Image (cartoon, rainbow, N blue to C red; front, side, top):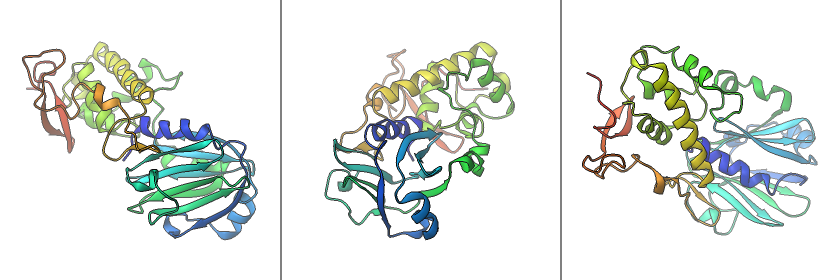
Length: 292
């Protein structure tokens, strides 16, 4: 599943093309992927102008002039591909549909605009969805009510971060970072990278981590997320853009998928891979001392 930087990369790309376009028609082949009443589609989607593209956690929101929004979760294999005036952009699970002829067998939803441009929602495994909701009700979706703050938000401070983390004093720090109700959008890659940056072992209990270390973790987390956005997302096997180019973040990663390779801080010590919080976890045994 894409993490926050990957979904943000999609948002940035689509924001270059979609605003101002008017939706003329819609087709879909998978009702669970487009669970919307035909009457709502005709009244609030068809003929609506796209106002902008937003992101909350790992979810995309396309706001419409009808005071409705399309809320989109890519899940494991979702893609959004724009083809039309001004170019082509897309991102998601790698397959020929990102660079080939569309629609194809993975296309679940096609939105056609009045200028002939189209937005394709492709999803090979059919876990993703595109819901049409009143814009005012979007924040009331169960997921949005439960999800934590955006880690890169200007008003999200180190004090806020520590307060939220410390609500799970007995939790393993990696498990707490991955908990979307604590902080939004952090997945396995960026948990490992930020914990290495802060020299904290992923299996350390929150109660044993001092404020200074949590402040460092806050800064490291924000830094690795922003770097990944700047690099176009990770090069994870499930994420490429419309030209088939992989995001380049993992070429700059310090520990993730680097097991058996030297730690950037300690060339005499190799990165190891274990399991913490049920996830494959990468650490440096010298940088990140395992809890006793």
